[in-house]
Length: 355
Image (spheres, rainbow, N blue to C red):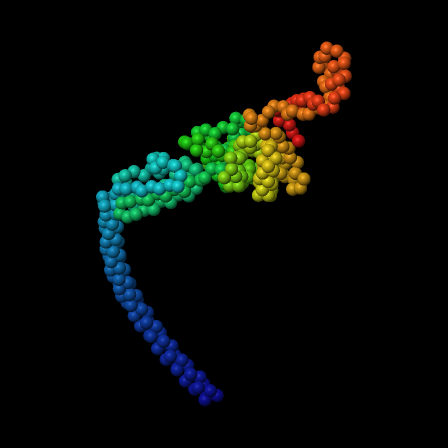
C-alpha cells in the first residue's frame, strides 16, 4: 500500500512539473506572438504603402501615356482624312454614297467607325448588294460598291396594262430584293414588268417572298438569257392562279408558264417560235406547262409582202350566170366549147386566222 501511494505521489509530482513547464512555455509564446504580430503588421503596412505608391506612380505614367497617344492619334493633323477613292460596278454616283456616310474631308480617320458608316449607307441605299470600306493610313479611305442587277420591274395589280417603267418605280434583282429606280429608267426599258397583287405595297429595301413573284423573277432572268440574241422579248408577267404565270411577248403572243421546270418550258417556247417562223406564221398563244401535245395557236403573219396579190386567178370551165348575152345561140355555143377557159378570182383573207 505504501509503495502504491509513493508511486502515485511520484506520478503526481511529475505531472505537476510538466504542467508548470507548459504554462510557462505558453506564456512565453503568447508574449512573443503579440510582438511578432505587431512586427508583421508593421512590415505588411510598409509593403502595402510601398506597392500603393508604385501602383499610383504606374497609373499616372499610364494615364499620361494614354493622353499623349490619344492626342497624337486623334488630334494630330497627320491622321486627317485627305482622300476618298470610290469605285462601283453600276451607276451609283459617289456623292450619293458620301451623303449617307457622314464622312467628310478633314475628319480624323481613326475616329471614323467604319462598321456604322457601312450600315448607314446600306440602310439608305438598298440597291447596294455589297459594300467595302477600307481605311488606308495615314489619311485615305477606299470605298468599293457592288450594285444589285435588276431583272424585272414590279407593278401593283392596279397597274395592269400600264407597265410602268419610270424613275421612282420598283426594280427587283434575282434574289427578290426591291429597290427604287433613281435615274436612267430608259436603261431598263427591256426588262419585263411583273404584276402582283400580293406586292402592291412593297417598299424599297424589302425582300419579296411571294412564290409567284420569285418564280417570275427566275423566269424573266432565264428568258433574257435564252433570247439574248433574238428580237423576241418578254414584256410582262402576271399570275391568275397559284400555279401558273401568263407571259406577254413583244410579238403579242400570250404564253402560259408553270412555276416549275422553267428551263424546259423556255426550250419548248423556242421550238414553237421556230416552227411558226418555218410555216410563215406567228405564234398567237401557247400553254407550255403541258409537256406533250402542247396547246398552241398560230396566226397568219400580218406583215406581208405588198407584192403578193390580193386574189389568185383560178381556171374555171363554167361561165358565170351573171354574164350578159345577146342571144341564146351564143350562150349555147360558148357552153358547148370546153376549150374556151374563163378566169375567176378567189379572194385571199387578209385578216389573221387561228388554226
